Image 1 (cartoon, rainbow, N blue to C red):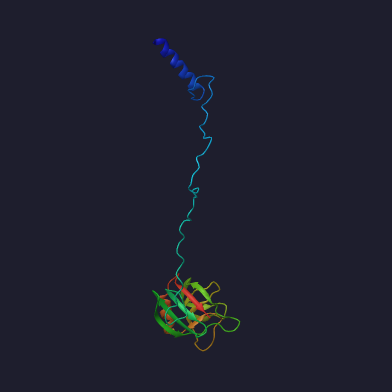
Image 2: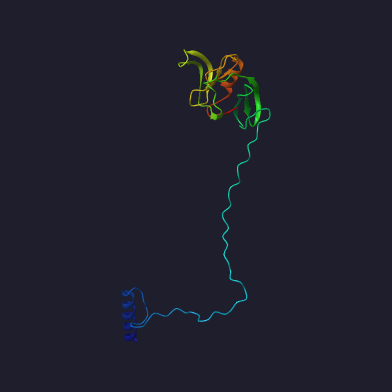
Length: 183
């Protein structure tokens, strides 16, 4: 019995040294089992269909704020064609319409979607002979702002407001607020 145990231990050690194969030396590995003839089937072959992952819902269609030509939900709306502006909060008009003057020929106020960048209470235009621009609310990279100004004379691109409206816009609009300018 002791001899058999020694032989079995020696064979096991040799097998481990060869990469874990436990078959006897010189024997071939077992052949894979294959079927020589498949049984006929009356069912069609199974097909695999892949369902694409669900896509996010499309964004909701823009809704024009009642009484304005704009689609923003919070900020200021400007209509160049009617020369009016409104303040909007939570999708409803909170102030306006109030009259404006906008850019004259060659200095047109640009249409588009903007955001308030910064505000300056006692601003002057260095470009136009230190013209006063009180209560300036800048919303466009080219220096376009809401500010108190003439409601009779077109501007050099800014949106002129009455004193009361300029103060209201200055106090209401904060950095990042939406500004939509429509033609």
